Amino acid sequence: MDVELMLKVYPFFLKAAWLTIQLSVLTTLLGLTCGSLGAAARLSRHAFLRAVGATYVSLIRGTPALIQLFILYFGGPQIGIQLDAFEAGVIGLGVNIGAYMTETIRGAIVAVDKGQTEAARTLGMSKFQTMTRVVLPQAARLMIRPLGVNINALIKGTALVAAISVVELTYTAQRYIGSTYKPFEMFLLSGALYMVIIYITGRGIAWLDRKARIA
Image (cartoon, rainbow, N blue to C red; front, side):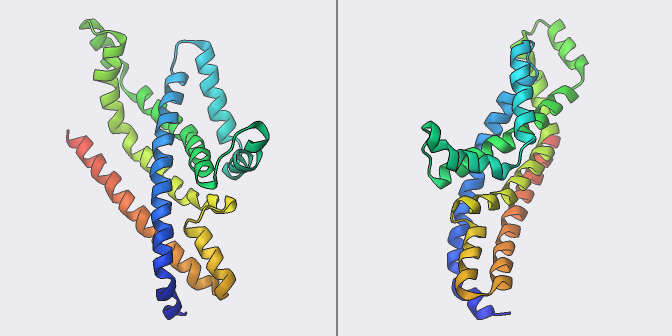
């Protein structure tokens, strides 16, 4: 193993890791937004909104994320959508993980005891007040861990954007393999940085989960 080479290219991998973190954060925010809207649609009393939510989840979860990225990045210009690789990566992965988050959020809300809702309505709360003051605070505690699983999967999934030339960890490893012919060292370095990012994220999620259960 060429440790000297790994130390030499390490700063470039750190730069790529920072881009991976940025991509993960932005994608997570978009995913949570899509997931919240999707869950609201899936739980709506209106049949049309329920159908829209169900179609979104079924369509996105039923097709590979890589294909979705290719359609957005390479096919977008044909219908007037011009995105650079990073923007396509954020939107593509965000919409994709949002479909999984939709079911996570919906499941947490449904898991709240219906007696809580009935009690709140008996006390004179409106539907909006019942949802925001009673249901969602309890559902939030239930969804932290499952959402954490989604986020960890998302971080690893950012490797897919290497296929559209976003210079994150996987793309950087591939680029240096082409010039050094040292695939073991490059992928080992890339994998180690992914593990650090995922470990820190996991610890943060565990901390949030503990705080939510104490509150």
